[in-house]
Length: 93
Image 1: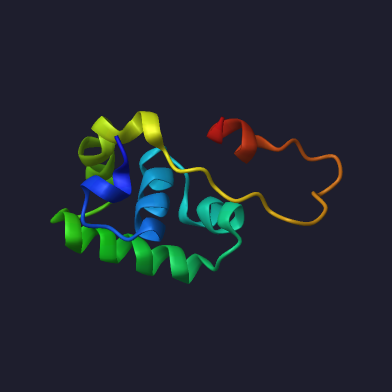
Image 2 (image 1 turned 30 degrees about the vertical axis):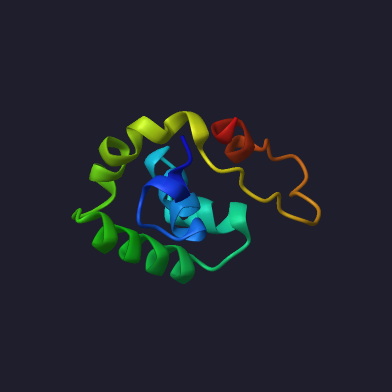
């Protein structure tokens, strides 16, 4: 099932909402998608209004039927910090 085709969200709102429902923080989502934390905040706020929910805690309930089709996040371009494990990548896989 396709999240963007079944819910009243834009593709970006659906992508960010899916990542938030999977437990990523706004900062982690912003780093993963190479956008600002403010962009993540705004997209989530818009998604909450469209879905008629009050916040992040309700996302996993709403998006549960779509969990098998989580959107693929873009990979960050550029070098990673040396010596730090890529825990975010492991959380997404």
